[in-house]
Length: 315
Image 1 (tube, rainbow, N blue to C red):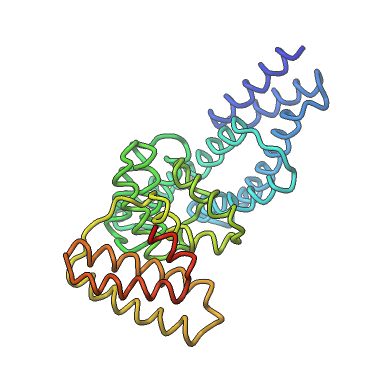
Image 2: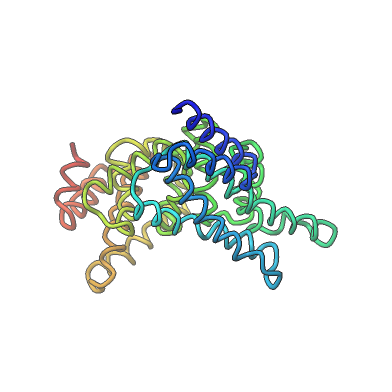
């Protein structure tokens, strides 16, 4: 009996990965007839029914193909909240659901490409390129994901969301050193734009879990990830700053120092971002072989605003 149920569960997963939700539901219904209370069957049906309800919402002809694909992807974060409510998680179920959801969204974005390819150069559509790349990544086609995400990043060089997706796919392609440089860059630009629900690379997921285990909220976790990424050696690959970048970094530090002093309502963001910039400045001083006194001065600033981080960094 158990073998039959396991076979049907696998059949359902295979159907989902092939974008055939109808066959997946049929297989799960058969499994329910054998074991009505099988936890993985019940869980997978709940997940699939949740998504079928969301996908049904975009069947209305009033919205365009891009909006439909965008809506489906926008539900990925609420889906995780749903998973937390129902409890229990099955890795193979989540993987199959991911493949199904991102393939479904991709179909809508591809309709945009088919409609517009003769009307304009799609290489000038960074938002569409990002979504297509994200979908290919979610479907497991990392090479095509890389192609689209590189195009998107070339058009939006300072966009943390795009850079983090490019970092993630590089990590999945085992280009780990480059991935770490890109993730460090993305978190520097805007931690809140890094959508962790879309991230799949193992070292980022481990870093997220480590920071969250320290008691930080979801918002705080994003802000403190670059700090602990540095302290734990995750963001160990760093690039040299150009002189103009170093100047901008110092201006940014001055701005955040004022925020920390004068705008306590923003401390949740300004404090970790300031510490992260101090880390970048110290790296710059070391790479440029500046006066060690400048490094010590920056270290003392870190000690003033967060003695615990100072001790961790120094050791």
